[in-house]
Length: 322
Image 1 (cartoon, rainbow, N blue to C red):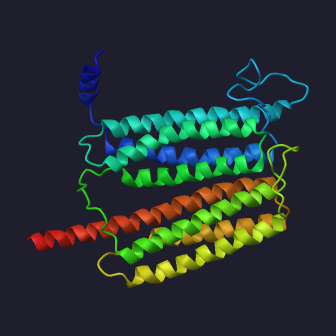
Image 2 (image 1 turned 135 degrees about the horizontal axis):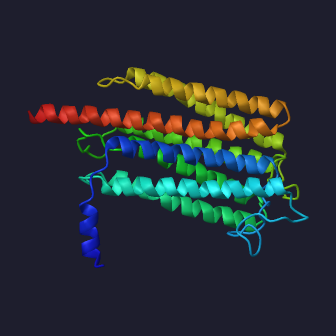
Image 3 (image 1 turned 135 degrees about the vertical axis):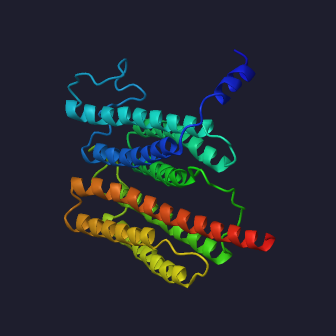
């Protein structure tokens, strides 16, 4: 079939509703966050090499098989995580198709964010395969987790980019320069918080396999560095609150801001209890899930501030034209 004919047939397909597009965007975000937690389950149960090869589980078999050197439960935990990757990929693919079918295609950013979802799943699966082939060396596991954080951030932006029926294209660079800079500073602090968190994990007891070499830094040292980033990030949130209160021309997104502060405080509390109680497995999984929630809440505030500022600028531009 000629490409022109195929494209014409695709263009005749009905425009998916915003509700459907938003539903799959939220589903992508939820599954991207959940797969990070299932990865933590793999790690704390020592199941990272339950399937010692990739993409096969065992040489010659895509599924777990009885083996005297590998516990059956560990095999299925790791294999279950791989199967869930397929679920994430299917949802991400549908999300992209819905974004592509949306008309008119005036928001290229929305389409690119949607395209990043299935591409990211493929890249993340490849990183996971490399991690297995490297026998779960700590830095490969860290990269694997950080890739998930990037995907959760992009998925958060995607949810907020789903076009509304009454959307008006917004001009670029409409956010006040100082506030834009501060948002980037906060995002950089969040990145530092996440990177040091993976290093705490690399120095900690849960490596995914009992024989995996750990990061040669005392876990207490890395925990203090990680906590320093947490306190700095909290301080930046306090300053952002004062900044938003002083802004003129748009109502600040206080609900999202309060949710972000609450999530960060709760995450810090879980991390402290986790450190004081010897890093129990359940709290490790909750801490990873909490990290994904912090990313989502931060991205939500980011989108709210930028979006509202753009709306104000559009109104101002309209009044000048009028």
